[in-house]
Amino acid sequence: MDKKIIIANWKSHKNTSDAENFINYFSQNVNRINLDNKKIIIAPSFQLLMTCKNLIEKFNLPISLSSQNVSAFGEGPFTGEVNALQVKEMAEYVIIGHSERRTLLNENDEVLSKKVIEAKKSNLKIIYCIQNSSQKIPNGVEIVAYEPPTAIGSGNPDEPTHIESVFEEVRKRFDGKILYGGSVDEQNVRNFIYINHCAGLLVGGASLEPESFMSLISQW
Ligand code: PGA
Image (cartoon, rainbow, N blue to C red; front, side, top):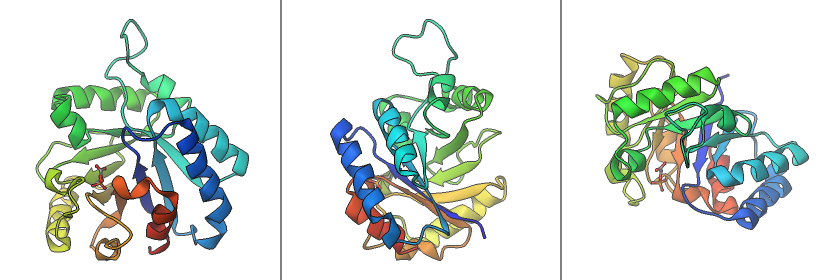
């Protein structure tokens, strides 16, 4: 059976002790939920990745890590950038094309394609975010997350019937896994579970508290 993918996108939240508390809580409570049918991926900020990696290894937890971004350049004189090889030391996945980066940091299709190429060179698995059914999906992407901007952080998720129609469109040109993201929480998660083609969820705000995130996970 294909495992459902649930990604915790922590965005620009948490310091080191917050991340430690989250992973510690998870390890103490992991036996209470069935993870056999799920793949859990946590996407913290870069500076928390190593802390999370060490703790996940220490407790032998079934959690994978993703970065939230990667440089469009390789190694070299690119001040402030974290390149794909560096990410690969800490994480297995990378999120590329999140709506917040497209809008606030002006990341366009050209930059995003470069990031995908760099990520592929370092064998990172790519979680590629799209805002609608027609947005470009570069070659080499494994996972697509459909996240309509109006649903992100608004408490107003997209309608399951509309999500399904977007997934149908995406499916015509992409045969990897398709996730939904945007205001998913422990109260509404069950609305998204039965959507055709839905391989999982990308969760922002509701992934920050370990207790409610684990409750969300446990419902799938
Ligand atoms: P949200 O964010 O769950 O807080 O709406 C989702 C995302 O942006 O990945």
